[in-house]
Length: 196
Image (cartoon, helix red, strand yellow):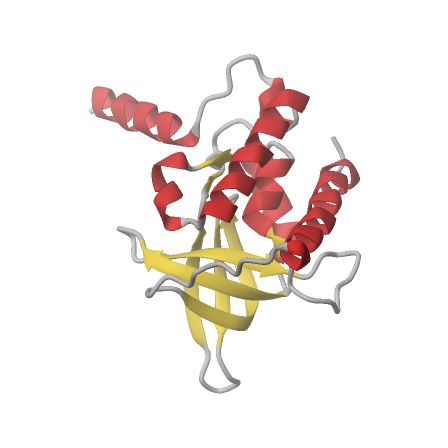
């Protein structure tokens, strides 16, 4: 599978999101704890759902470790893990992004929606949700355990994207029995404990 075939659904999705966003009459209620960081530079991609961004003004940058909200991508040593990391890198690395963050996890990573301009309009508005793009092409799961951190609209978009990817057998859904990352991590931990 080449990158062009991965990006085609993401482009279609970004167009749909633009249409949905402009057609939506009811604005999303802003959670009290939501924080938006505008025009951050993505300076590193760790895996399919974690990146490093530099936010702030020149001379006063703040480096943030960001975990994409609403998604759990395959781990690097897991099937499809490298593909997920490569796609996230292609979507975000070296590019300006808006981070919509709502909490931190146990590792002190900021949990954020990472918005970038679509490649088809690199100087346009940052309307492409990179996590949603990964789910759309079958390189991540909608992380239902943390759905409460998303707006109802985001939950609907992420759930539908996963449903469509499964139906099309896109990406990891082409496997007969894809293993969810949280299950893979649990199995790896148990395996390591058995070895010691």
